[in-house]
Amino acid sequence: MAGLVRRVKGWVGSPAMKLREAHKLIAKGKLAEAFPLLGQAAQAGLAEAEYLVARCYLEGAGVPPSPAEGARWLERAANQGYIEAQTAMAGLFLRGASVVEGGGEAAAHAPGAAARPATTLFAPTEAAAPDFVRATAWARKASDGGSADGKALLAYILTSGPEDKRDLAAAEALYRASAAANCAQGCLGLGLALLRLAQTPAQLLEVSALFRRAAEAGLGTAMYLLGLMLERGDGVAQDIPAAARWYKQAAMRGMRSAQARYGLALMQGNGVEKDLQEGESWLRRAALQGDPDSAALVGDLYARGGALPPNHAEAANWYRRAAEAGHKAAARSLGLLYLTGAGVPHDSGEAAKWFRVAAEAGVEQAKYDLAQLVLKGEARPEDSVRTSEWFAKAAETGDLVAAFNYGVCLAEGVGVARDDQEAARWLRRAAEGVVNAQFWYGRMLCEGRGVPANLEEGRNWIGRAAAVGMVDAQVALGEMLVAGRGGKRDHAEAVVLFEKAAAKGHAGAMFALGALHGGGHDVPWNRPEAQKWFRLAAERGHGLAQMMLGRYLARSLAGERNLKEARYWFQQAIERGVNDARGDLAALAPAEAPAAEGSGEGDGRAAPLRSGAAAD
Image (tube, rainbow, N blue to C red; front, side, top):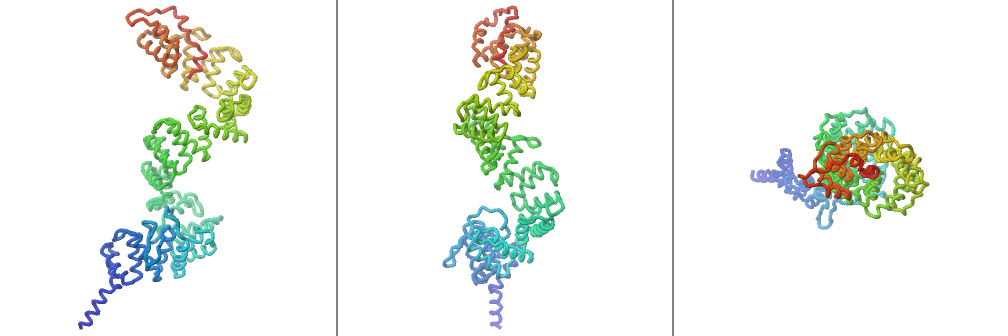
């Protein structure tokens, strides 16, 4: 009887019994209670227990995580032929873990590496460089032992590993065997292998069926890929709502590409109810995982506003994140924020830096943005050469916009030696299709710069630019009509042109309207109208308009007298370099003394129209 009791006690306390009890506790979620039992069974040499102990250490389940301890126990189980451990060892090496041999010690260089790496094999990772030699050895052992996961791992190495290890035919056979065993990774891998060559609807249908099997087994990558096929109608009937549902499931599993697609679907109401806040949240998650497209989209949302309030400071943060990850459009957007001082301090140097990045990445508009800074002298000297070279090369291919910009570089000596004749040649070529070139070429003809002077032809080219709404051309043509340069004199038509330019905020045009209505021109006198236009131009910083407004107010030329305000506008004009206003200011009597009003006619015509209109 005593012997029987001893045998029963020994059986109850056996490693196998402890392993069974540990399984029961694990099923109840009591991992911390299960771990000591697993440890005792593992110490006794049970391979399954060693494997489970390894998982606990690698996953931090019931015990603090320890990649080194996890790898050590995993190696012990694998060396005993435990197939799941062999598969996991292959996965560790494939993801960048390194087992240090000798004395049974092991260490993993990838903290937090999964104990079952096959479950995330096809997901992107930032682990250390993989050890394909050891990964292949362990995967082959697991595959030869009948592991479907092992076959999928080995097939992955033969498909995506080093060139000297690749064997696409053998990989496809392994994937097929793995998929036949209902291994989710095998289905996904086979689907990816077939997708590379799929051309017919039947082939795409087979791929979609494999992705669906893997997706239904819970693989996020398969969910995302199935969503893409459903959204595009590749191999399956297009089903946008179903695509959105798969994107959502993959997004919830942390797949950044799916987070980006689901966020975009929510933003656009594509297959789901439109929800800007939720959409922004998913795009933000993808961006924080390093997706540059999502970061750029979030930047766009904050920059443009709309349903969400604009926040340029927030936009700058997201554009920077995207630009630093190589998103070329975001680099230009960030440059524009620095150029305008929206959300960030105004900084032409930073603007030029990001325009440069975008331009060198192929964003054509960024080249023109950088060129504008070059012309203003707000970029690096080497940018002058760079931009002129860009435009010269593009101009030679027939690009008229580039021809215009290269002509400007030649005319201004930007990045190349100034050459008025060559500038005129390129501007003439560009004038066939570029409004700005018509204006520039017209001016060169009027000035006789690089070409024989021809006021009539120059006026015609400027008129073409004015006719399509170019503000500077409208003002320039208006001045020529007032003076009768290059053709007939027509003040009424000049008023029409100046009014068009003034409606677009051109201060010089406003000043010209004030001068024309002030008298002495082929336009009926209208002093109140003149004062109105002088005020509008003065408020926009036009120095001559400030002086004229001061005169009108000081002398009651439009019926209103205000010496205090007149003094203010004279002072503003002086600060802008209009020295004639000094005499007006000095002539102002003290506020209590009467001011001479004069006859009015000469005072109203005191505006030098041409030079004033050109200043903006």
